[in-house]
Amino acid sequence: MPEVQKRGAFIVVEGLDRSGKSTQSTQLLEKLRSAGIDAKLLNFPDRTTTIGKMIDSYLRSESELDDRAIHLLFSANRWEAASSIESSLRAGTLILCDRYAFSGLAFSAAKGLPYTWCRAPDVGLPAPDLTLLLDVSPEQQAKRGGFGAERYEKAEMQERVRAVFERVGDEMGAGGRWVVVDADAEQDAVAYELWRHVEPLAQGTEEPIRRLWDEEEERRRVSELYL
Ligand code: DGP
Image (cartoon, rainbow, N blue to C red; front, side, top):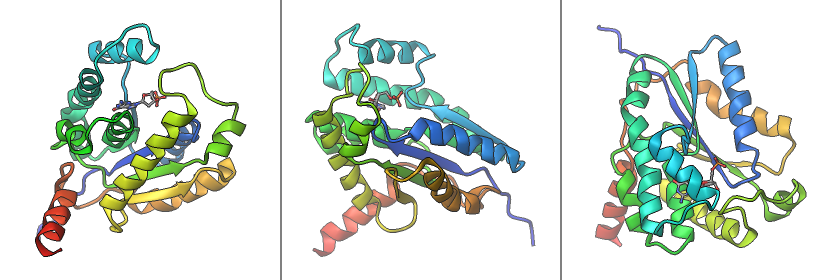
């Protein structure tokens, strides 16, 4: 029997501002690397590219853009990394990603753009094998020193984003690919919980790379047919 080739796993960490997402992603990377795993951490938006610089200027309120235009830029910023994500995965590297298309959907739908329109530009991107949503309560967000000065860092906006993340989670279903982690817990407890979900994927997976939002679309089509 020919041996099935493993590829690196694709793991996304999502969450609201002040959820501890970036700290936890960095720690997770260190833990993976010290376990001997070839792993890379990406951040979206990637503010270093030409598109990323436009996004950065928008987030700092140094420039104004139509809501749809900025949405498409966030998506383009992921697309410009898509082929390198895929080739890293195929080369056996685990890709850890601090935010991905789910943030794109959550933040733009929270502004009032239609949900299905928001999803469309990200259709076909490599789909994560696992998404960990760090769920922080408004009370904890406030306790953690409130928000910074960037555009979306306001309590009402965060509440709306939270609601869209819930909807995304419901649609992702119970297949284990979307995991909600209580981010109000102590830092070590959150890290432990994240590791519990990441460890089984650390050595790679034999599954083919899927595309966003294939499975979810299929589930929706089937339920529309039969309900
Ligand atoms: P961060 O660098 O993780 O703090 O993210 C910067 C801000 O941008 C944060 O408030 C979340 C928001 N954001 C991240 N990705 C997207 C996206 O794809 N679309 C929109 N509209 N906002 C996003």
